[in-house]
Amino acid sequence: MLQRSIQFVGALLTVGLLTSPVTVRASESPVKPVPESQANQHDRSQPSTPSGANQSVQPKTNQSAPLTIPAALAPYLDPGVHPDLRFDPGPVPTDTDSQAVRLEIHLSRRQVVMYRGDVPVKSYAIAIGRPGWETPVGKYEVRQMIKNPTWVHPLEKGVVIPGGDPENPLGRYWIGFWTDGKNWIGFHGTPTPRSVGRASSHGCIRMYNKDVEELFKAVTIGTVVTVVK
Image (cartoon, rainbow, N blue to C red; front, side):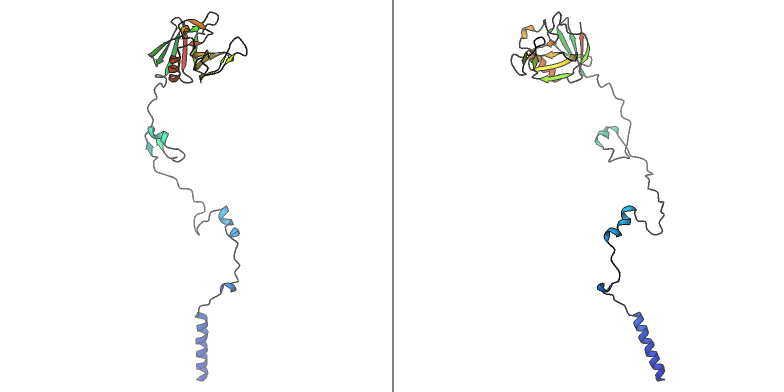
């Protein structure tokens, strides 16, 4: 009987040891920490996939119809930020030059007429090229616009009058529309207003100073200039 009791007590002690929690101190841990650089190496080269997930999952696609908005809003939206936007067809563009300013020089009338489209807006008195220095007939475009231009004598080398000088033959404004690569012809002011209305220039179109200033503000590079007899 005593022997059986001893065996029973021993069994209880054995069961108690097996079911008691075991605590391991950090200093006693036999596990060596893995360096962070090695632990994250796999993450940098390939995204992690949950266990059991399909390894060949295709990216999601947007099955909904693209958003369509008025074409008038297109200039205000960055397509790089809104790649799915679609725009309604805009109105058929009208002739953008139909209302553009253009100039017609009438040599026989000593006059330049400013048009907006086909509507004459204003005319100005001009001087044109003298015999031997005639203003060339043809269709051209404004290619130069200079305020306070420097004048270089067309015949005498080294004769130069700086821009802004009261005696500058070009006045305060220059609008060039013809060149042969060396010489230029254009609209400009003049310190001798009495020459306006005559054939007195070296091919250029002289104007009263107030008129050429007004013209300078109305035209741009590319404005069409037509010269007719």
